[in-house]
Length: 124
Image (cartoon, rainbow, N blue to C red; front, side, top):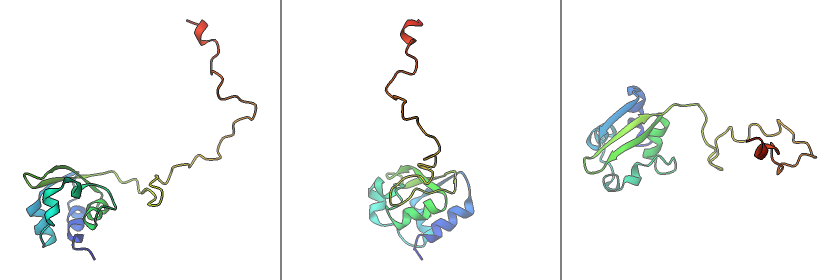
């Protein structure tokens, strides 16, 4: 169990499209202080899933961060549409990448470098 699980539960329960929160509100929800780097480095709030356990808390709740204001100590969590598909962690590719492979065949005698319309220059 992560100390950031309460933030995940909070965002899931809110379920709103946009959830602005101050750093103090987040600390109130998680019942502990944010690390100093959260107040100094915008990258701490990135949406990179391998960034930290905190990032997984909001991503797993279906949110992404935006409008991070370090000076004011505020962040906005924006709900993202969940298609139920996640990028493969090994390749970083979306699961439907390559789903059409093998569904069409190009004739062996077709030259793909030939112009599609050889008369295009004379038709103007």
